[in-house]
Length: 486
Image (spheres, rainbow, N blue to C red):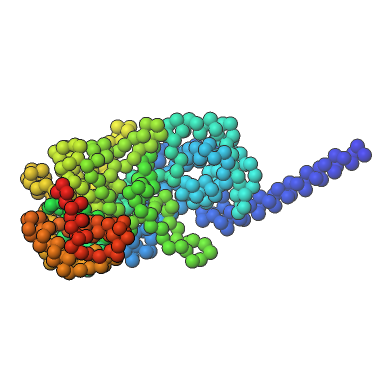
């Protein structure tokens, strides 16, 4: 019996070895079928990760670019993505430190990097004793958790920067994407402008002046009396260009992270769902498809909004408004009423408006050159020549005055707004309004007044339980309220 026991043990060990060999062979075969780069080769623990991030290749255009839309293509390797093993490792460790455990595919989705790239790195991190397998997961995956060593390293990474979202896109790739989607390559036609302004009643002569200014892709002044729709016009200019663009969720510059996508300013426009079982479009998920941006800033604008802002608590930087508005429109509303002087703003932008690029200072002290590729619209109630000097006016080639509406246009606006708000229109009541409350007192017509007066009448009729209609009495009530201090 003493001799048979070792013999059985040896046989069992040999059988287990065969099982392990077959399992390894099966795993290699699965990797060969699922990995674009062939079988997975686990990086030895002693193999050092690159110390410096390689310069990323320019984003590849998808076939759909021929149809007018540029699409970022998923990189095949970390080097092609402009990332290093160390950068992704730091993001993985900080993510696991916040979640306690996660599968490899969750980490891939969270970092927006293909699983075939993340999976070998996770095997390498396991060999380095930074993570451990807590259990298996479907589709040749595992549930990972931090080891004590991994937790210590994650805390050190978090002290430097707490960011652990989508992997950043290198700055050169972003610059190339702006060139591919630039406004200067867009040449809206008269038909495009009519489509963009179809929900506004705007004079044809105004569209004729706006058309060349929009085609230039340069800055413009919209000036005139308040209430004539300058802001409404500025907000719709972007619709004359292509509908969507791609921007990176964040940008990486020498280890610094700068957030680019801002849900408060950008509207996500996802691609239509893939009809097949597998999505073979190979889109780089670090980028997000948004509606071509229209960003409006008013009297709250300060010089800080025009520079990279560092959150000292997280060490994550925020892109300035002009960078977030690239390939779109940036509207400076109520120009001349900002807390900073007009000279400060104009001196800051006098070179970018001329050269189409800007310089930004990072928290590290590094200065970077970025595209300045947007249509700048200065909207003001003041006379442009009273705000700026000739040198700056020369760099804003189009100065368009938004004039008061004619009486015919004003009456048409009243009729349109009454129908839109469900108020019964009465031509005799409108004649009464024009004679008593405009001609008799010399009051000027404004484009916003038909909407505002009819809203006053609508609310009054609702309160008094009357059928909403335009009458001399309801117009008297609306005018008394609306023009009380005007």
